[in-house]
Length: 93
Image (cartoon, rainbow, N blue to C red; front, side):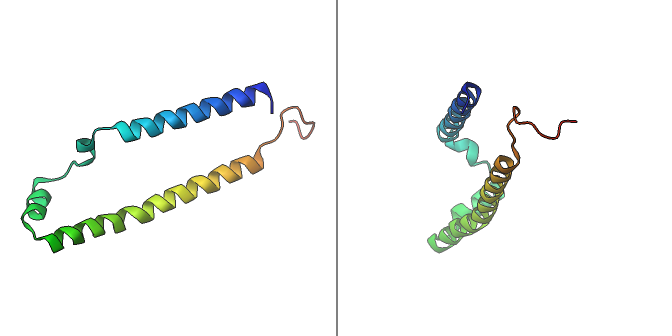
């Protein structure tokens, strides 16, 4: 590993840590933007309806999240497969 790769790896780790910290530290009300009709319907419903609404939200959030994470993993693996060493002799155009 060259010095440039070490500093790039360190920078990538620092950016990832900063993103994780900002996503956790973001104010909760900013994630709870909803329409007034949905809010009043949920507030006036019983406990079973509220639990069903929570389950429905989880069911709708989990598949896209897993798909996005899977896509990121595939792209990351493919990127590492294609990289070549710039000092390596080969097909230079």
